[in-house]
Image 1 (cartoon, rainbow, N blue to C red):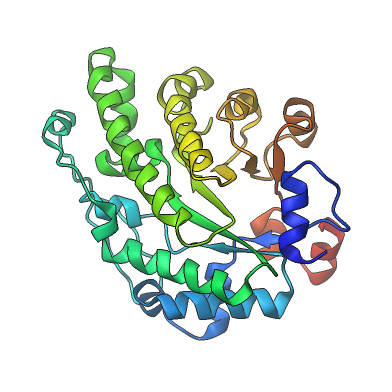
Image 2: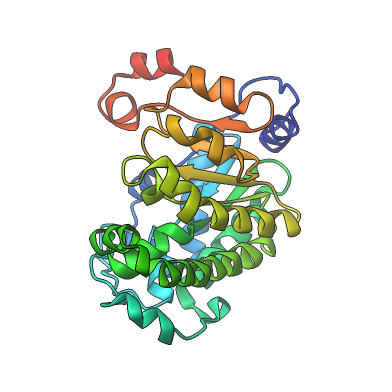
Length: 300
């Protein structure tokens, strides 16, 4: 089996010849390629070079194409900082008041230059590897996460706590869902084998399981449905210990859940069973960053 066959087998609930590996590696790849983040996020050929070289150097089965966590936020008007040697980041809202959601204008994501860099980089990687390695086109953030950046996490959490805000909260989430679904549809045209999103602020570290079901789950379901309409499997990532919402995450219809090491592994097995592929989960700090090569091999 090659890498692409290996991952597809797992997604089809079949046993591969060995456990496949697909790493969230663009930060390490940028460092090892000797390019800056500014070069990476502005040039699709650099995106391809970084990811191809990393995949070939380490012999991974799948390539996860990622650029940063604020591309969609920037596309809808969130102010974004672009450090030369660090990933792009945001810390200011574009909606100073929740009422401004009533005046939001539609966004055609296909016209966004940074989105096009991401898409073309993915297309180039898939063209290079063909059916040899599995290519996962990450599509930045899911709806709840984009909304939190449009308002800032602090204000967004307060918005959720006031019932009279909920009509506009859901209006904003609908708006953000459309943005994410646009990216999914565009990514599907690159030839990627899978699409994915992160929705980390929707995890138990920030909101209760009941709030997750009300404000995140319905929109994640719509995004998964969009991926499936495009004929692609879908992976959802939420940071932190997601043990208490595993049953709800399963309801999204995602083909795979990418879970952090804090989530209870036995609970993952008990809840997901053979219905959803579990992706994870090494401790990225204690093992990969601070651990010895021997510890990495042991945990692998």
